[in-house]
Length: 275
Image (cartoon, rainbow, N blue to C red):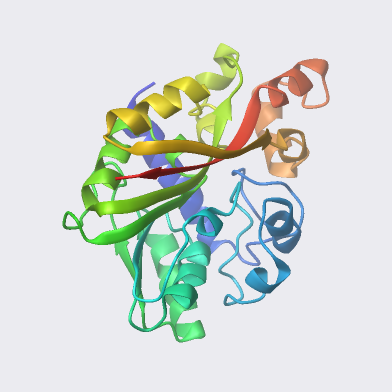
């Protein structure tokens, strides 16, 4: 499948997520459960205080972990958020780095950027900037960030090695990478790997842990550590009406034993590393 077709499909789908009326309830298939966004947030590692600390509409419930919890942020730090979406993680880190710090969110979807900027204005965030860019080719200078974070986005890239090289480039020496993402326990069936729906759902683009860690290390990162690993609640995602609609189009029974077997192949991880 053509990489550009997949990338554009992902951008278009997440753009629809950003512009959907009452977007929390009209979610497209994404890296999330069909529960309410705050319930999803608590399930993947955010505190109730964090969930209540951001503007309404910033948390779309499409993450798979809490990367900011790994980052050990301090006042004055500069943080780059890869695939910042509606700005949820960017706003959380902006509060921690203070007025003298800065959060830079990077996203390829114009609709997501518009929503993020709307949320920033709503929350009066003066230390947050959102820029349009591809995480495989960041429109940012080298050696500018103390931290790079990302939440369930890098799996969407078919060139993960380049993503980690770019993350390494923009980090200052000694800077920290802190991400949440999904990985595979073993290979997915071809019909999932080769489907656009599977790629947008953060499944088809996922890779085995050893391969994933290989990209991080090849980029130059040291002290690479898997901080946590747990079963990804894919079975909950498969209960989502939108996913069921897609599965029907693919003639796939989401209640089958095969669906449960596929769910067992996917896990979520949090990972840290140092430049």
